[in-house]
Length: 79
Ligand code: FES
Image 1 (cartoon, rainbow, N blue to C red):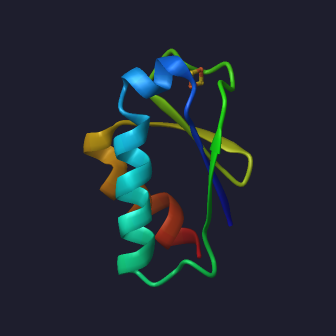
Image 2: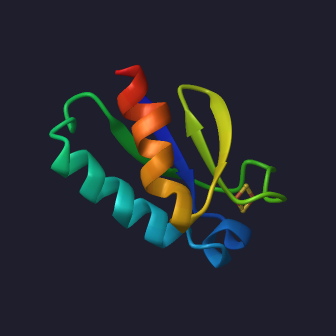
């Protein structure tokens, strides 16, 4: 599963760094590093809502507060 987190400037301001760190921790804690491929990407043109995170091509808006929930639902829930 390919997970791409936007590190463009708008998303950076909304906490993409924090989200990446949390995601890395969650991947390690759940021992799914062989299944989840975390990547950074530049602006994907969807800065309006929250930090833009793409899971296998599907766009989501995530904030640092919702990262854990997002991870459980959209990542762990689909592995
Ligand atoms: S800066 Fe993240 S989608 Fe534009």
